[in-house]
Amino acid sequence: MPNAAERPRRIRVQRDGPLIVEGPVEVVGEDGEVTVSHRFTVAVCTCRRSQIYPWCDTSHRRRRDRRSGPPGGEAG
Image (tube, rainbow, N blue to C red; front, side, top):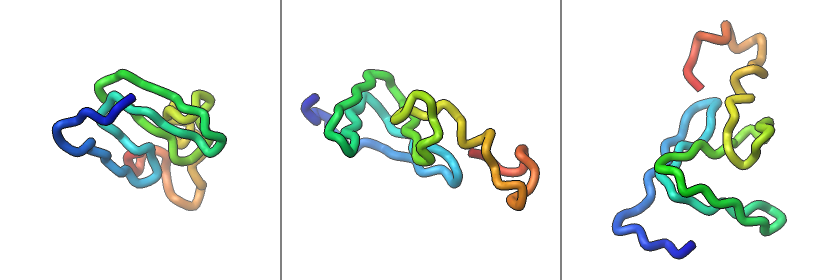
C-alpha cells in the first residue's frame, strides 16, 4: 500500500493501551508478514496479549496488575 497521505498519519499513544492509528494502515511484523486494515481508525496492540494481534482486542484490560489499583481506575 503506497503512502499517498497528504498529511502525516496521526497516532495516539495511550498509557497501558493500544496505539490508535488513523487508517488505512499496513503493519509489518517481525517475520515480515504484512497485515492490512482499510478502516478509518485502528487500534494496534502493544501488549501482545491480543488474540487478533497485531490488532487490539482489549486483552490488556483483563490482565491488570493488582498493585495498580481497581480495573476501572484508569483508561486503557
